Image (cartoon, rainbow over all chains, first blue to last red; front, side):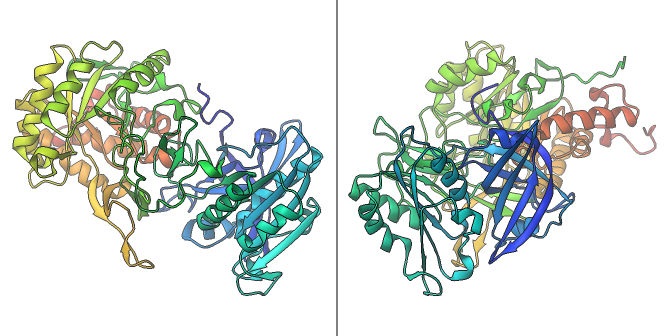
Length: 284
Length: 315
């Protein structure tokens, strides 16, 4: 046994609910004791396509919320955007069907020991893990503000029960169909100042995470980002989901977003390295 | 008690069962050890280790393809020093039977790696990955030229000492794989590993460019299994007594049986581990059952069985 994947289990989980929410599907799974080991930021890897599928790789989904019901029972909830063959297959599953899942996987958001002032920033269905995080932060006495952005109103995922867990919610859309017209990065600087934010948590497309990192570095606030690199295995064996990250020793290494992430310190990630290895990377 | 004999050997190395991980498909071993004890594998084949730390290629490194995937990792790894300090002792502590895979950029790299490994305890065999660009030959892959394939293997043979079996891993991207196999065996290899990935490319029809940052990548998964079966069959015909470690799209006991019937003595599971961390254990139990259902008393009896003349007794 090792410390890698130490809470991960491979189980068949029954779908207890699957409902459409705007452009997404909200899916609840009965997962037994897995829920008790799940923390905000963790993800699951789901086998897709059924028995004779030609899709050989799992699909990773952020966990929206986990509910430990005690006595080895529990539920996790996912927000699925059916944009590819695999995610569309998952979204089309009926209540009562079983999904082969591995979880919980990856790092979780760091929870401050002091009651701090937190700003949660989500892009598209990247908002999913932020509501569970918000509940935990609120329980610790933190003030929680949230900004959600998407291209259009249909792609904002902000369920009623989720909204209850935040103090104030700001919405931005590129087309102005909901909230403020613009990007989350347009409103984040003012929100940090206005609410005297201590820490920013973000989840969404890589371009958004890069923009939020720039802002948080300028403002001198902590920033934890949940990154989105495409994965083949989710359990650390395939080495495809790597990204360049600067370590405490100042050295840049290609780290796996499934094992060393998805939650990482925003300012440690070298965001602007698309399709190249940054100069000075270990072993380049 | 079943008297079925599941043991196998590659060169002089003995293995309790024939199911191995494929190089580069089991991480450091730690990642899979949460799901099953590594000692239950015939062997862990490590990722191909090189002399120096290596960042690997930029992303995107992967594209899913029908019944397979394309990868371009670029041999990311810590280099031989850290590998010997961390990875090997950990695998030994787990009771894992270990085959070390090495890769070099020059003939001299292979020599140095062999010298570094020859006195290391806890290693059962060496897999020599020669599907790497040779910097001394305009980046041509060693495995695709009988002369350079030979040179890399000879270099390992001269430096490894007597004990450790050498398994040369060959590329299927050649005209006559049995010829390359004969060359590396005459250069001192005890066996061959068949097959490495098949070179491929995916073009993203949204960006209108190759999907992978490295442009080309290695195709793996069930899509390439018939290529593996063919290569193993051809090499077994040409070299009836050489050890063969088979791999290529094995995801079930039935798939492993196919490679064994073609002539493999052991079978590595690669891409299937990505979709199912328990793939090796499933393949192992299915294969053991299947061999017995077909009436074989041992794995050795089934190896190469598809080569028997017409009219012979059929199981």
